[in-house]
Length: 185
Image 1 (cartoon, rainbow, N blue to C red):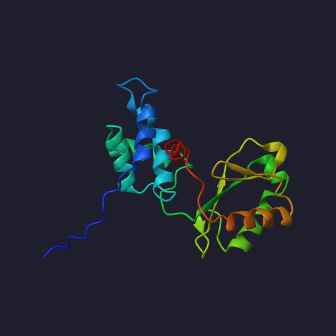
Image 2: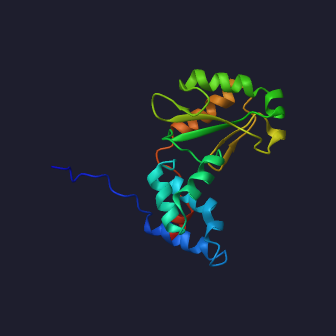
């Protein structure tokens, strides 16, 4: 006898569905694929910070695409996570100006403090995932880490890094997503 406890197919919240419909209106009707990047961002935010194969299939169905078309994009861009991540994904800039201002030391310090290794590893407490990324376009404030939409700048002292981690650890709730804020108004 087969189990009837199959995992539920992922579904977008009503607010996310409304936002996706709004985004699709910005493109010609026969070019829904043009909305793929913003819809993947919504999907990643809605489903725990990563886009599982099931979520990629949901995105494909939503935009009338083949799942492989979504997979190709999700695997190309480093901003999309293909496996579960911590509550906070710390994207550490690794390009020249940040390296000159101490991003290697910053990375080593973050690895020591969080217990995670750069390369997408998550800390044992589930709070932090560390990733190196290309230029974050804030060279004058190097070294820099991006967490969601926020930049943490001038992380060239242990005190500044500790302050960032303390702020992130003290976040009780995740930030309200833009389409959730619209739904509340």
